[in-house]
Image 1 (cartoon, rainbow, N blue to C red):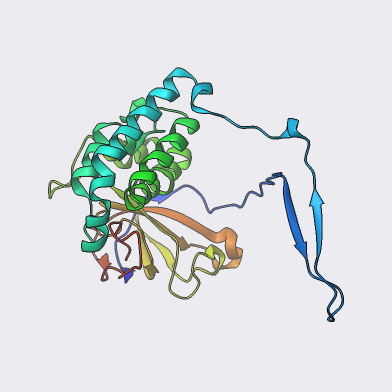
Image 2: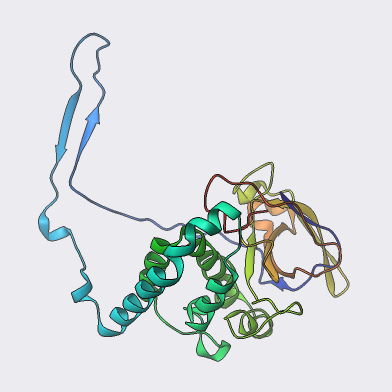
Length: 276
């Protein structure tokens, strides 16, 4: 249930994290139900909000560029033929879909946005969104495995890691290499903790520099792909005086001394994806 970290965890990823605020605006045609100001029998009031039709954008399959149509067709066919017939069985047995994930890697979907310099497919965000939608339609568990690997593990290293980290922890993780046990290299993301969930600012895991290594102490929880991963991105506090800005990210091999895994969570759904 918990991912425990102890000694000799190394490879610091970048400087202490800084927060970036992003404003997102959205619009739609909807009717909101406003509660009555009176506690009596006055009926609830409805407020209709009209948005000009010109502000609504829809994209259909025929409007996609040809290369994105190819991604759509490939992923849809794979989902219908390989995922849908097996999704129920995997979920019931709490079974990791090893062969399906191997085939995802062969299709280039386990490194879909990464540069070709690091064995990635180098496709854009729209391709990724299309692929995720179709794969998840076939099996939600496989969609979660794929998204955690691409978005939570590969992306931070690709965006913020050094060339050395990219060579060591991206190139072997885009579906072309396997670990010492013959398993496909998959990554996971260690942020959540038992006492604070995903509140990164309240993380109690710490990291202290010890010569040319870092010693990380703490416990992580609810980590997707933990039992199949070969490496993890782990968040730990390196400078408590800076509060949330004193948190850094580390790339940690799963076979590092002191790194231990707890039992798999017995989830209500998406059970083919391990969580620990």
